[in-house]
Image 1 (spheres, rainbow, N blue to C red):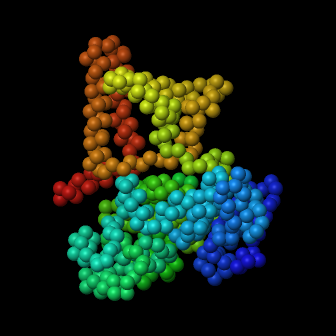
Image 2 (cartoon, rainbow, N blue to C red):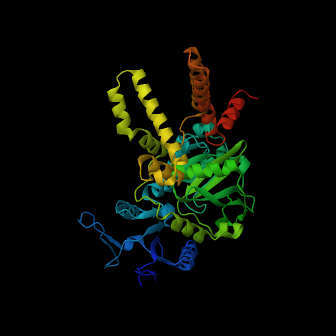
Image 3 (cartoon, rainbow, N blue to C red):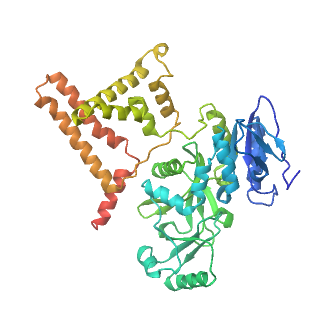
Amino acid sequence: MRDGFVNRVREAPGLMRGWLLFHRDLDPGTPEVPEVLRFQQAAREADIDLSVLHPHHFELVVGREEGWDVGYEGQPVARPDFIICRTGAETDYYTLALLRHFERCGVRLINGPAAIERVADKLHTLQCLSRAGLPIPRTILDTFPVDVDLVERELGFPVIVKTLKGTRGAGVLKCENRSQFEDLAGLLESAEAKADFILQHYVRASHGRDVRVLVVGGRVIAAMERRSLTGGFKSNVSLGGIGSAYNPPPEMAELAVRAADVLGLDVTGIDILFDEDGYRICEANSAPGFQGLERASGLDVPTAILRWIISTQDLALPASAANESDTLVNMAFGGRSGLRAISDRNSEYRAFSSAVGLRLIAAGMACLGHALGPPLLVDPRSRTGSGLRALYEGRTSADLPTLGDSEQERTLVVVLAVGIWAAILPWLAGAQAEVSGALSLMALSFPFLFMATAPSGRLRSSLSARMRREGR
C-alpha cells in the first residue's frame, strides 16, 4: 500500500480490464473519492477488472523498441482494454504525457489528453466553442492594468470574474458594479496576483440556476437543473445548491452534444445557462461530478458509462476518429489525394466539375447498392461499406459549421440559386420531358437537403439575430 492506494494492478484473464486514473489518495473525505469508489462497485457488477491507479506512480520510458513497456510502482503491467481519466481540470503535465503515451500505444482513452487539456483551460474551451459557432457568454481575458472602460463597454455590470482553472464553483465571483470591480482589480494588481483571470458577461436570465447535461458517447443520458437556495448566483450542488431532474428541450440537448463533439469529449458534463433568447454554454468538464446528478435523476452514472464502453469497445478506434468530411471524401474520391489527382488531371474548371460530379453520382449509387443489394453481394470491407459503417456507428467526429449567421444565410441563398438554375438547365438544353423532370427534381432536392440537415436552430437563431439588429 502506498499513499493510501489500496488497489493493485490485477491480471484476471478473460475479463475486460480497465484502469481509472485518479490523482489523490483514496480518502473517503475527499469530494471526488466516493465517485471513484462508485466506479469500482459498478465495474465489479459488470464483471470488469477496474484498477484505480495514481498517474504519478507509473514508470514511463520512451524510446524502447517494445510496443508496450509500462511499469507501475516498480512492476510491469499488462496493457488494459481502456483507461478512464478522472483528474479533470487538475490534470498536470505528467498525467498528460502519460496519456499521450498510452494513446500512441493504441489504448482506448476516456477522455483523451487533447480533450482534457482543451477543457482544463476555460478560455480555450470558450474559444473552441465560439469558433464552432456555439453560443457562449461574451468573455475577456484579463490583463493588468485592467481597462475598466473596456470591461464596462463590452460586458457591462455586473460582471463575472473567473480563474482559468477551477472546479466545483471555486475561483468564481461576481462584481455588482464598476466601483466594486475597480476595488477588486486594484487589490489583485497590488498583490501581484499570479493567477490568470477571465471576465464574463453576466447572464441575468440564468441567475442562480443552470443545467448540467451529461453526454456519453455523443448522446445525452441525463440532466439536472441546479438552483441556488441562498439567492446567490452560483448554483453548484457542491456549494449548497439543489439539483432536480430535468428533461432538456431538443435545442438544449443538441447544443450539449455539439459542444461535446467540438471539444472531443466522450464523457462530459456540459453546463448550460438560460439566456433571454435561448441558451449559452458556460463550461465543460472532462471528469464531471455526478453525485448530485444521480440523486436528482436516479441514474446509475458509472454503470451507464461502463455499459457504453462495453457496447462500443469493439468499434472503438485506437487513434482519434476521422472527421465526417474526411470519411465522405474517402468514400467518393478515395481520399483527399484522390481529389487532388482529379484536379491535376483536369486543368479546366468544367472538366474538373464534370469529373467530380460523376464521382459523386457513382458514390451515391454505391451507397444505394449497399441499401438495396442482397447482403451476400455487399462487401462491408469495401471503401463504401467501411465508410458507411463508420458514419452509421458514430465512429467519426462531426465537422460542425464555423460560419456565422450571415455566412450561413449567404450559403443557403447560393445553394438555392444553383439548385434552381440546375433545375431549369435541362429544359433549356431541350432534353426529353422525362429526363428533364428527373434532373430538375434531383437539382431542387439539394436546397431542401441543405435546410433539412442544418444544425438545430441555425436558421431560427439567424432570424432572431436579424430581428434584434433591426430592433423588432
